[in-house]
Length: 338
Image (tube, rainbow, N blue to C red):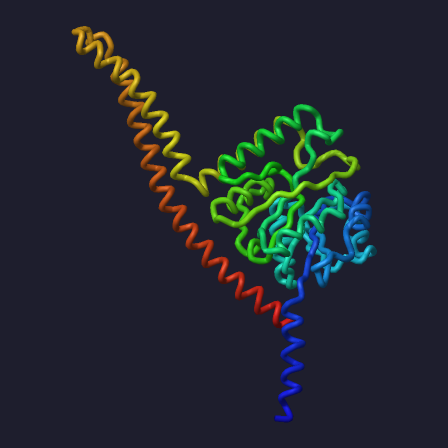
């Protein structure tokens, strides 16, 4: 009986530690020595509902003193790449490090101080209130002065395309200002090397992960974007990412749509040939028959590819579930050891 009070106190202390919420704010960096400290100074030090806030940078092969600036400021963790691997790889490495260090919520922001640090509280609020597992900051694109009219239109077009591909209603898909719950981060996979922003939305939409968008503010531009060298390059790579993600996560719809369109187009010269055959002048229109047969065969084969891809996609879903459980066991064990 004498052990009961001690046991009770120990249990209470354990429960209080378990219920603590830890936020890690991660920042991908590539030669950001000039702007990083400005971005770090803008980050919140305290948020209601968050018990602990830590900071992490992903040094993506920087050749300047980015790491030194970060360490002098007092960041808790530094993930180092010896060579530049791109934004997507850096983002996933940051998630991995954050999860291993016990993060309950992970916020991703930029090193150029594009986003207002005070809005991190707005980002994490839907997760703290159990309304969402992924929260994406919606920038005031039309009011952003350093965005050209063409870039504004392309941002809206890209977001609309992602909404169609993902079945979600996220208004600002390219936004990198995001918050993830631990559960959502455990399920994320990024396969392309360009950017994580578009693929993760399509993947989350396919996996029915609860997402929400909140309005956020932006700061004046400190430097030009390094993600793309030209507007044409941005459009080309973004569309490639969207199409590839659509093929991976919604293959049946993707290939069936293309196959049906090709098949229907093939029916047109086929019907034309049958018409001439019925009127007794079909001998001079064999080309229509060849074209119809070719297009209809291509359309049918495309639909078959869609069904095969759908089976592969189902297997991919099983592998993702296995990966999720392996990650969860691995990270939770490491968290308890720490």
